[in-house]
Image 1 (spheres, rainbow, N blue to C red):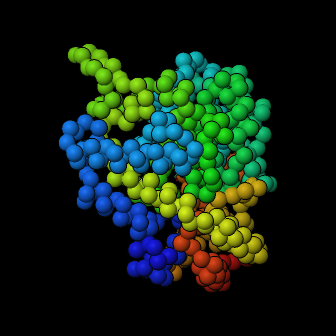
Image 2 (cartoon, rainbow, N blue to C red):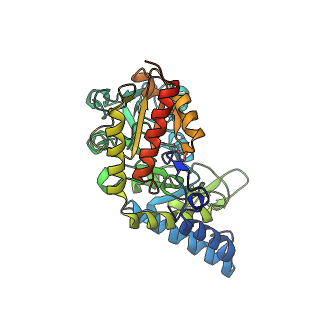
Image 3 (cartoon, rainbow, N blue to C red):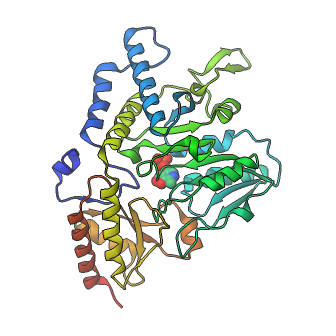
Length: 391
Ligand SMILES: Cc1ncc(COP(=O)(O)O)c(C=O)c1O
């Protein structure tokens, strides 16, 4: 807690919205500020010392972020967000689309991993298939029958941003690759809570935003396998990625930098590298798993609410709803008591549609949360129920 300026300033604030964005520790803010105060220049093109220092800062950050997911720097592009990366992948994934080709997603996807594929499907008359999420267990449902010879892309989240369920996706990715489909993993929710080794996952692409791993906005780590990197066109075109330009066409550079047209957000990359180094030292996994257990156990004891199932393994995110105390009213009540939670569909409407659920409340924990905060949250929730709830 004392590593975060926000909580030093506001010790009564309980921040339970880390699945949306994490608060930023001092060491990460310091790296961000140091970059701007000491090394800031445009990268790759400058022929002066400061430009070389900025380039070196960016490339060192890339290496650190790559090793965080067991990748080589030559396979990691740094883009502004998971949303930007998934849009780019949907537009440029190297498939000669034919009407009737299929893309396989799950109903647990965040809209960022649905809408780019829907747009593509509308352009080429493709079929989108959705793996259901088991309403009893919260795990990934049956996918075998949905993967077939027309499947060209499987794009799947590693964890639900509503329930926290961490899905066992490796068998699916292996089977998809064996059928020649490109495999993409949205690791936005998983990156802060599981150790990711891209080579073991059998994915061609994996993306996560670094604001969800205790860093600043404006940076996403985008892993691309050699095969995908080398056969895919740049997502955007512009400065920094061309070999040669004529009046009518251009030749692009090879390698990972071709995905980074324009001036990159070097400060965000530097901050992100500092954040993942900090995160790896936190050893918070046991602490957060225990807090989650405490929270789930306590919520289950309240018959007036229902906790969503979250599979065999989960991130420290928990969702629940009550028929008699509406999700938005719960969130507003908690907010009045300085407890920040989320209510709604959480940009993942398909899961709530599949389970025929109303808006739900989401509590998502981060490294700064404590057992006494869970207790205060539960007491406040109960007080709200006593005032506004009805059987
Ligand atoms: C699973 C998942 N995918 C994608 C996104 C989009 O990330 P961003 O808003 O950083 O682009 C989010 C954000 O909440 C998410 O939880």
